[in-house]
Structure formats: structure tokens, C-alpha cells
Amino acid sequence: MKKPPLHLRIMLGMVLGVLCGIAFTQFEGGVQLVSDWIKPFGTIFINALKLIAMPLILGSLIKGVSDLKDISKLSLMGGRTIGIYIVTTVLAVSIGLLMVNTFRPGTSIAEETREELVAAYSSDAAEKQAVAKKQKEAGPLQALVDLVPDNIFKATTENGNMLQVIFFALFFGIGLILIPPEKAKPVKDFFDAFNEVILKLIDLIMMAAPYGVFALLAALVVESPSLDLFRALGMYAITLLIGLALMIGVYSLLLRLYVKIKPSKFLQGIAPAQLLAFSTSSSAATLPVTMERVEEHLGVDEEVASFVLPIGATI
Image 1 (cartoon, rainbow, N blue to C red):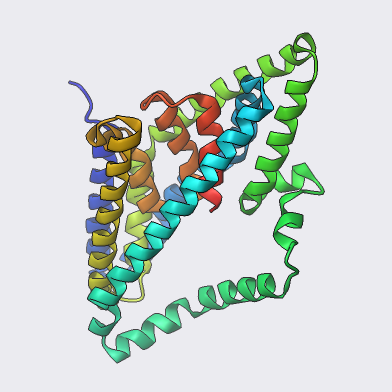
Image 2: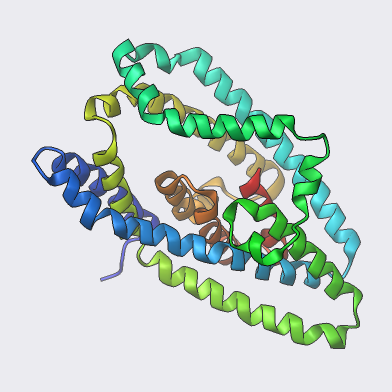
């Protein structure tokens, strides 16, 4: 019997995870049971994806840039990429503001529940405010300074330094273009094989995706401050889903106009990565799967995917 597609198995894992989480909150000791015996498998799954994110970016981007054979192509692709990301980000922000001001999801939450939310997530908010304050106090060129790593090994150990890894990979790839082909060949052959290994590792990890997603969603439900609070966020979730549906419509229109690909084919090909993004809320964890899907299932050239997607994950 043929297995269902991966995205359907991930969706099933999401649904069963939520139902399992709700069920385990109904009896004493259920929350502890999920935290001790189910959640760790979700954590292992996320860690495995993050583990290969940096090697994937480093290897595929070096190979992709060195395959261009012409630095002018890199600058052209970079300009187009940044331009498209700016336009789509403005559209996403506009749709988000429209949804919030139209539905006003916060007004449906009782004052007591709102106070619970503030208490539950105050530490995360304070951390983000501290980061924002630090960035505001930095000089106007601090973003440029942060782009260049002083230690590439340190940069690759922190998923938050993805732009530094991208910079090093671009720099290294340009160096390969500029040296004689016979000297560059052994290095390019190494990264060719390296990328094949990483893609195979992604395939192996994604075999466990439905189970990892199940564990993550079950843990999310049981660790929420209360089910009443979970239900109170329903209006927010509906607002978010409507906004995402509109954004999917925008992307579908762009695909139809400029790429000449059926939106249904694109959505089916990218579905596992999108469902994983919903489950993990982590760009670093989702990036390896996204790159594998667009290269293997949507026919995007490796040099394009390895350049465009890591930048998108950091914006």
C-alpha cells in the first residue's frame, strides 16, 4: 500500500498532537507525562533540523556561487532578490495591518485573560525589547559591521548569525570563481559531495517529521497557561489564517504572472515546509526542508535556491 504524501502525514501529526494534548490535560499527571516522555522527541526533531541548517547554507551557497562562473550574475540575482523581498514584505505588513484593524482580535479577549497572557509571555517580550533597544542605540552602520564575522566557526554555531555565514559563503564562492578552474575543481567536488550528503540527511530527518510535529503540538497544548486561554486566542488565529490566505493569493498571482507555474503545483510541492513552519515557528529549522523541496520538487536551480532562501529566512 502506497504511503500518503508527506504533507498529509504532517497534517495528521498536527491534528493528533493537538487532540492528544487536550486529552492529557484532562487527567492528573498527564501534563507531566507529555513533558517528560513526548516533548523530548519534538525537541530532538527540531535540533536535528537546526543541526544541518548551517552546513546546508554554507555548502550549497559556496557551490551555487562558484557554479555561476560570472560575478555579474551574482549582483544581478542579488538585486532582484532584495527587490522582491522588499515588495513582498511591504505587502505582508499591509495585509497584517488591514487584518488587525478590521477584525481587532484583542477586543474579544477578556481583561482577566489578557492579564494572564501578559504574565505568561512577559519574559519573551522583555527580551525582544532589550534586543530592539540595543539595535536602536547602535550606530547607523552597525548592521554592516554585524554582517562580517570575526570568527566563521563561532558564526556557524549560532543560528542567529545566518547572515554572517551567508557573507562568508559568498566571499568564499567568489574566491573560487577568481582562481584557475583546475585549482578550484577539487574544492567544488568536495562541496558537491557535501551537499548530496546533507540532502540525504534531510530526507532521513523528514521521515520522522509527522512524529516530531505530533510531539511539538502535544507539548504546546499541555504547556499553554490554560485551555481557556488557548480558546481565547481563537479569534487571533482566525485573523492570522485569513491574512495568510490573502498572502497565498498574492504569491499565487505572482507565480501565475511571472513564473508560469500552476499555484496548485507550487503549494503541493512546498506544503511540507509550510506545515513544518507552522509547527516549529523556526526559520532555521524549516530552511533545510524548504531548500530540499524547491530544488527536488519544484525544479529551482541549486545556485538560485542556495542564494535566495537563506537570505529570505533572515529577513
